[in-house]
Image (cartoon, rainbow, N blue to C red):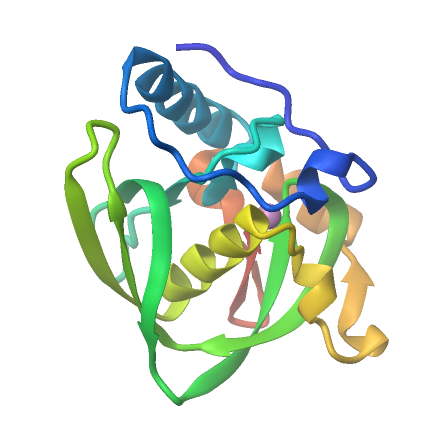
Length: 189
Ligand code: NI
């Protein structure tokens, strides 16, 4: 495994529609492993292949363990992910992005999403995601379509620079990728 460089806003790959994966070989599994390592090193909670300059439909998501809730960390790797269903209820939440360093914005998204796709061997898989997990998957799948969270912020007043204190926290452990602020989490994805 190796970490790969994360590209940032202004790089054309971030704005391209990523290609569907058709070859499920060792190179794909290497990409997935590298993306997981890159995500953990960042640290962050989600990463899409275009963010490491690979225009293919691959995402990895890792929800840190919740000590209060007593839930373990959840790791997902999806090839060709598709949102097949969302609920009507939407919630506004603050999001950040490893490719848009230094900024966060309020984005409204459905609170539940069912995602279908494949694993690194081409085997079909599905997940029903709620709340933060649903938000992360939607954010990552947006990346595959050349969409960034800043495109989804409806009001420029809802975008802001992260504070130096938040930036400091964000460079800590993986679990610290969620920058706690007024009880809300900032997702770096
Ligand atoms: Ni992102």
